Length: 146
Ligand code: FES
Image (cartoon, rainbow, N blue to C red):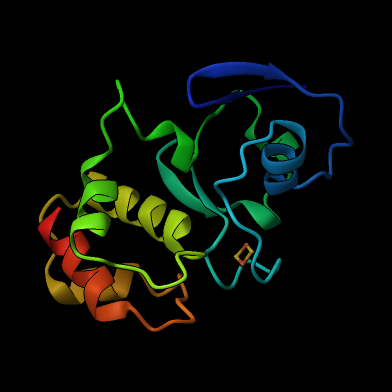
């Protein structure tokens, strides 16, 4: 099957029920998206599929054929971090940073549909992303300021 990731077309020879996360990490060596719960509950694996943040651990890779997938590796342009990546750095919005790629992808999706979300809208939109270090106040600040 063919999938488009970060504007590059890839051909994969994998079973249809392979998760998008495994396809990215194991087959394409794009290891920015993380495995947390494997059940769609923690958000560590979130990527954009046609602009929507989805948990790639429970998304079959076959379902993203003919769609556009963007991972954390695809945000940087011409050596410049995406404004949300920069804001996470500026606001020190992590401790262990395991959740950061999924957090940032969810925030990118939020900002693309609502460029100026209120603090409560950020909190509501980020419900599906868990930070075990509890860096939530700094994460919300970063998303707010980006
Ligand atoms: Fe996919 Fe937790 S690893 S949501």
